[in-house]
Image 1 (cartoon, rainbow, N blue to C red):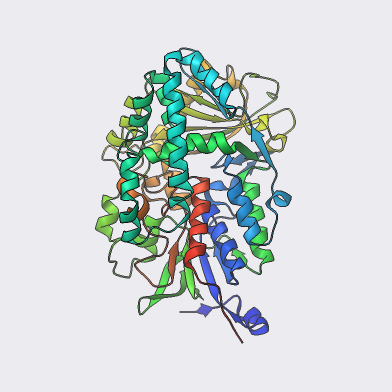
Image 2 (cartoon, rainbow, N blue to C red):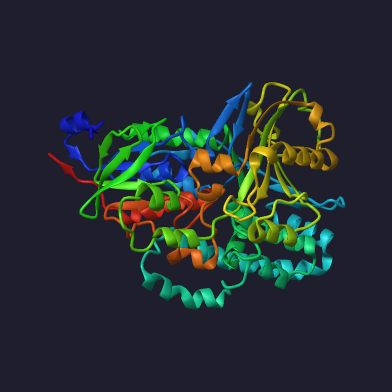
Length: 514
């Protein structure tokens, strides 16, 4: 076996700095590499894709930039703090543009709800939709704030790898009724079904079923209202490239188009990684931004596990998957003037559709769609006069017994999606499309090595959160750490950035041996 060390010459010149390898250049991996670089590590980031960003990367086609995953930036202070930890100024590297309204929710009967930051304007929307629920909505916002300060600012920004850490917070979990679902909490506060949907759908952004995900996630309502919803000009892919620039300025290396096949251990401790090519890279610590299921099932396949055994992983509940249609349209920049940056199109069912997707694993004819029109804000995404869109539909992951043959279903499902779009939002769309890309659950499985083609790794149910989730410091190998959607605190851009912040509290500062 050939063993190589790409930083050997630099070590000889500068003294042997503690070496870290980060597997995966998703946003969590990039943030981890920045944190490690700030601690003095010589960092190598390895990713099988050709550009950094992971799910937050982009594809450029026919003059259009298709941002593949996250479309918004929330809690912007997280990124400013990350850059500041590296001695950098986030706002010099990335331009955020506030989106207000955040998004518009539409129903088939023509009803609309506009989510926005101003409290009184938001209350006016509630009063217009369901005036009898205004007092309950006010209580919901108060509930959301309490859960934000406990769930995000406290638990979400520190490690939960010790059982005692969980035991200490159980009374607070009980007081906040974390056993209830997000939907159940919304239903306890308001009676109108449309408003219940508007207050409970947010877990879908992190792969969770609103009917089963812990009500702690109602914190998103406060998070959006307090800190706003923003768009990174150039897309999240631009932010990922800016993160890569910081890493390289720290002396780190990004190895793209390179796949890690195995994490190498000796006497229970990591010594590096083995690439798919057979080459071996040495490291003092390894941080995996690969899906936690892939990390334990594939990258540590030749080593016995104490907790995350194949049987345990098989029992784990994963998030739903996604069908995403990216397309460009010709000469439409002045068309569809009532369609802004984000629109959510509800189907005729809400709770029934959720049960079909998450529990029954059934692909239905009806659908709810998330429509992203970045060209409403950022002209760089499309040729002049044109538009860039992506339309996302939650669908079952690949692990259900009645799995879908996506080779056959892709054109049929896309045709159904087109009909919904033309009927409810974008009339005449079919004649305007000039270029397109489609991602199915099989794409998520193959491109991102996501178990079952899940869109957001492990579903954030209460018994798959905090201590119950794969830990940021691995119990399976000394010197192995995890970041990204499959570890604590979880999915979503703020979540994966926070996994790197947690990592920074667990990893000691680097040493330099001269």
